Length: 351
Length: 262
Image 1 (cartoon, each protein chain N blue to C red):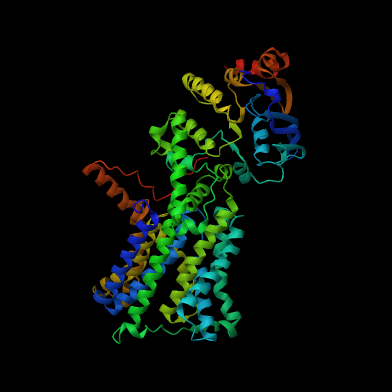
Image 2 (cartoon, one colour):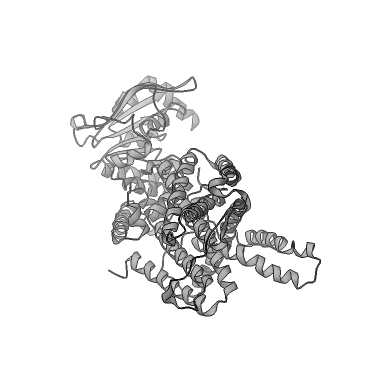
């Protein structure tokens, strides 16, 4: 009974993951690593939401940075009004406002397909960062709003740093998000998302309300972006329009494509690359003693090369590529009694 | 084929005098069709006669300009397509419409009009697990009935056409239909497969009403209790297979053409 339970199985996996991650941040990582790991967790939350929307439900969003912005500003504005509000309340409020925004985008999205939806969400990504400068009294204009770094509760001891605490919060939020999304993707809801992605006509005939399913995918995806946005505000400590340019939306989309479209693990891999590639290539570039205007562009060039190579070598993304290698290895090493895993990328839809 | 007295079983689907126009082109003109419980109704006609359009009107993909469509006495015209499966109307598609990224078993499970609550799904409640298990067992039973249970773990793209055709019927049965609409179930099948299909439909009729659109005239003649012949959007004949075979207008409009094609 217990062994067959998804709740117990997923619950134990994710609980173990949480413990390992929290121990790593406190005993292995230095402050700089914790700072980077926090960013990976934040981007992974947002990218995972985008994976559900784009990879699993087949709706493109070029505006996920804008949705993160809604989450970040919800937290920042509320903290400006009431600096003492607890962090958990900020996270929940940001999820709620962004989820509502996602429902609105989703209702429009349910009527738009492919390039039209991409265009509409692109407009959102471009237009939303203009809003704060028009309502400067609320949103602080281009300067933005400052956000206090959360302080760790006293029982964790005097040596427990703010970086550690924020890393704990971001990682815990990330693990919970992935737990929920993994259950969802695996269950009936995830199946409906894929049915709509691959063949809308057949999905309707099988009793799926396509519009409702697409809106639901948008709300879930936006809620993740809202949570990520709220954490992002705490991480940057200042929320301003410049943090949520089109670049952020495109980076998220790049992350899920490199990582493996439709794979939650891919969202983590992609976010990791997004954060660490510039760190590593930056170190590499400065070791070459190049002039600064060349050295500054080396990370960007390498990022482009990695993107191209990743897509050429792993058409299903890095996570998808490793999954195939693993499957190949298990086939060579011995027969597997497990049913074949789902492919991680959508194939050509029929009809 | 008239095992029961089909004229006395309740009417499941009643289409009366529907007109469907596509930007001035008349696709259906005053078409009527009655399907009773435990009855198999065949719809035949040359290409472009409006057979699939008739199914599309019943499936609510197109809305007729005039006429009524009722199911167990209730109008379908106010309902969206997706509601029909929940009411027990299942339909297969001519183009198969299997989901390429789902396994055969998952494709069949997907045919069950499911409503797992979102929260149960997200938090992996035991109720969601139980429902998955039940659906899995039912889907396997359907695959066994269709004789393709050994392909449950395969992806549809890798399967022969005949197997895919069986999978889509297994999927349609997941809705536990009281009305099964089959769009060209025999197309592309071998003679052996067609015979097995005829046998299958014969066994399914005790559980449901079946309407099928088909080019394979011999197959339709063999399984149907009544046949409706469409030509250029109009019903040109309707009746038992023997009467249709003897009808000279049908022979001119349709059967002659089939011979010409063959």
